[in-house]
Length: 101
Image 1 (cartoon, rainbow, N blue to C red):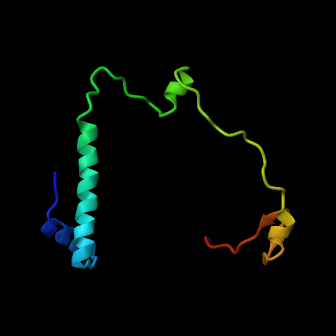
Image 2 (cartoon, rainbow, N blue to C red; image 1 turned 135 degrees about the vertical axis):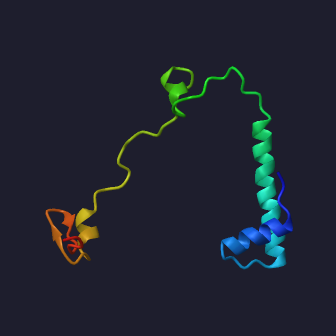
């Protein structure tokens, strides 16, 4: 699939965008480039490949290890310093006006 300049003009009109001719050409090239990538992905033979329920399923099944960073605090607790400029604080929480009755 390839878009023409008139297709880009119509899309820009529907989106209420005003594109210069240069911007329109650049947008057409970028969108057509995206469509080229999609066509390349569609050309890959995926027969016999079971879809994953979740992107990390392979790691759970032991096929690949996830490389996650350690869950450690890297910043000191500065709650009091951060809440000094707040209009109202109670028990370490920011108080805000009620907006729903």
